[in-house]
Length: 480
Image (cartoon, rainbow, N blue to C red; front, top):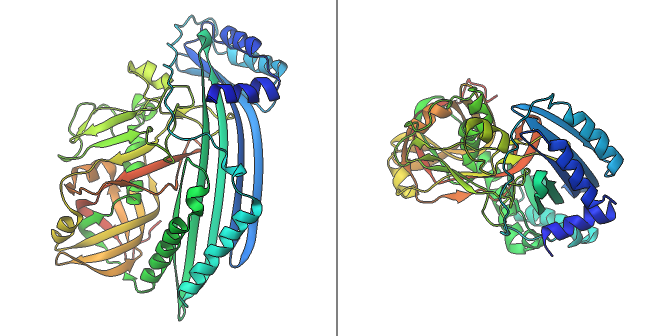
């Protein structure tokens, strides 16, 4: 059954809207506007947290509603409601139409349709019972506790959502998507004497629960969380200073996402508030650095068949061999900048407006082996994993905390260290990349991106990287 057929049943069957009347209302509302759409959404979500031997939380939520938007030049009229009926829609249309103010715009061309499917439409909430989910959390807890006597506390969380959306715009355009999403996370606290350290690992994607319930999968997550917690028990305080830093593959690309990715979103560049504004076509990174945003990867957390304006997702090259060649665009900013939208118009829910947002953002592989990169460093830091960080979009300056890191001495990985933070700017870091590994991989499916008060699921990825002249904060410096 197609996504349009399924969402028709939800919005024009169960909810009681009349499809023909709704399409006429959208056409009337957007007459004379440059762009806009009616965004219909139905979503279910659930979550469970097993912590310290107890079920701490178990939640379930269902929501539905619409967001109606009209765009004139760069002025936006937007209204949303949880009631799916014609009366409420007409009240919203009256408010939204006010932004036109007599301006006779040219309606933007509707998005192109797509028959591509990047993930299944199964509802993960229906695939496992409460008892089965609870049993999995208990089994993981018991597995970790039995693995090492230094395990002090275990926390396991399991979550899923099933989201159905339909976008209707002028000219009879309609597009729909069914989006499943699951995630499992394991966190471990180890204790040795008076010292306690943590480690965590998670995975997920746009799929059913079955993958996460596979013992091989959750064993891997649990083993890795425990390994990291045990490594940190032996970690020494990181030394501060300027040094060569090697970033591991996969999740460490969260630094790339925050310090570089946001600066390559269309709205920041149109408004010239990004450090990369006005640099299109210029060399902004080292040779061999190619960065893409790819929303078309099957079953990945950041993938979307269509964005929240109805534009099919695509692979957008942002930096090619060090040269800035593209930005991520929604429809409004693309139109105002005279370029095509890239399928990056995303919103958290029907109550939010779409903005240019990342999907799966990654640096592509180079030609160096990870071993070769490590061997090239006489003295430095190997950052294998990261936690949180802060970034200033305008300047590109960032501070990121490593949750797993090691000294590099004489071309070999040495002692684990704690308290290491990377301080710098995305702009300068791109130029300081001196070696790009051949081991590019995406994270396991745990990323969530915040912007304008909204959160959306994303993916990040990169190969092993060598960055020269990086500032590392350690002893005597804060990691905030």
